[in-house]
Image (cartoon, rainbow, N blue to C red; front, side):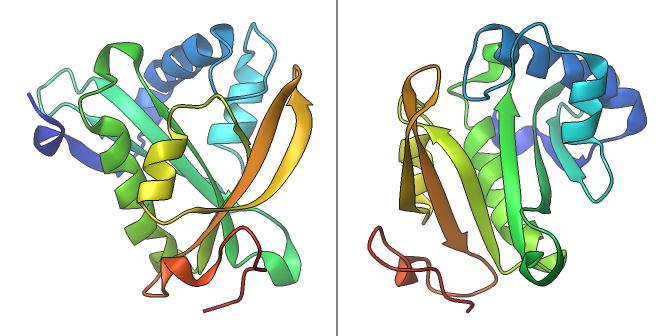
Length: 179
């Protein structure tokens, strides 16, 4: 099965436990998220299923509908800055390297403007995160750095316009502009 065979759609309530297991593994392994293990169900729910959060998953088309990855979109800020989304992605360890992550990131770029967002921002992308290459390939630009942000690892702030704006409009030395 390839990533193209997967179904990408909003996460169903019956899929919460599968996503919790995937995210728990990521937190336990300290991969890309600053949460301390062990992950609690309350922490999971507030991040992935809280008010204003849209959660989308990639699942197999078979009757078991195995969740292989997911992302969330939510306002990065409140009020007048709510047009900027924050996103987080996770892929099950067994599905990594198969294109699931790319498919989810590309879907979020298409879905974000349909939800009223005109940009997606990542607040803390660890310098050691291998997904940085994918984000940069798909138009994200580094707009800031937080030294020693998580366990001594620097973190980057990334921003990308969505909805038809030119992704090259923002670079490391420019301030993001509304498209």
